[in-house]
Image (cartoon, rainbow, N blue to C red; front, side):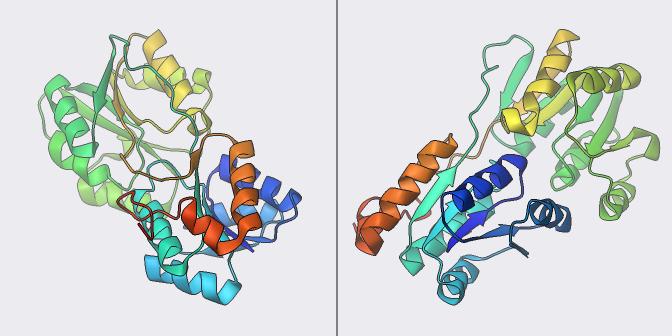
Length: 276
């Protein structure tokens, strides 16, 4: 059986291809909405965050032969736990990550290494700022930007009760909350930017499937400055940006057994190869 860290639309597609290739599998997700998406596709799913020890236990209890990590590019903790668990359990770890989109040289795009830097850059620019990075790091931006003169923070996030409660606790006014489920077309992004009079948009370098291109393209076409938070720097080891590469690597690893998997890259969190 193969364990697939899922939760995104491309992860679901990859899981379906792995099953079509003849492997039994179990997808793991964090949210109930992601679980529903897997169930609708007919995929078995387990809900909940997993520590490194949880992954080791999963390998033992479910006879997992390999871990395929197709989690979101910014799910840093999940990936590190999966790598560590795979190393401890002695099974292959294979990373799938959608390709990045290159807007780095555009005059309206500013890169930030993390959320704190993005918040600081936004504080310098001010204006009407639309935040599209979700609710998890909302507090970082709210604490830095709310209360600044000539600054309005518009937060776009999933329409969940806990998100609305978080906005209330942080002091974000209801009129500045966009609670919608994506993906968003370029036209819808443009309409939202125009409606709020956005002068600065903040997003993550998620990749095409994450619709970051529609957000960016709409913003840049309107002349709106954009801060792009770059992906976490993680040494994954066996990493692919296409489904075929993942399937080929999966076949190679399992064909040779555990010894083959270890010698060809069961990687630790810091990127070194286990056993070296």
